[in-house]
Image (cartoon, rainbow, N blue to C red; front, side, top):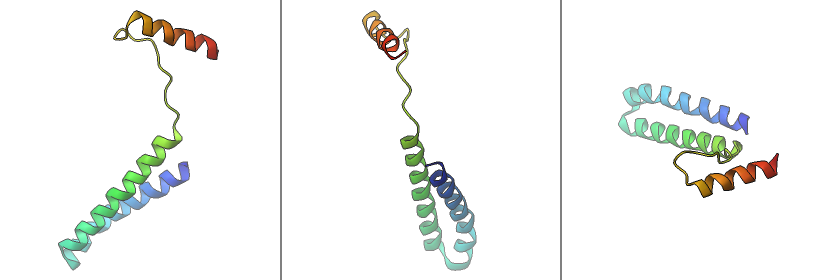
Length: 80
């Protein structure tokens, strides 16, 4: 998944870099097409990143109730 993230990141950067010359040479419609493509590539990159990273386990927090912190501590002890 890391390769997918790198490829789509580079693609998004290239599309953004090509958008200004395309706007000058061919008009604003091409600028918008390339910017939309860059946004789509960035969204795929972020989706691949979110999918590849596991969620952080819950940790005790002062904003949680005492019961919730006790439950989190108990789950952490069971996994260790």
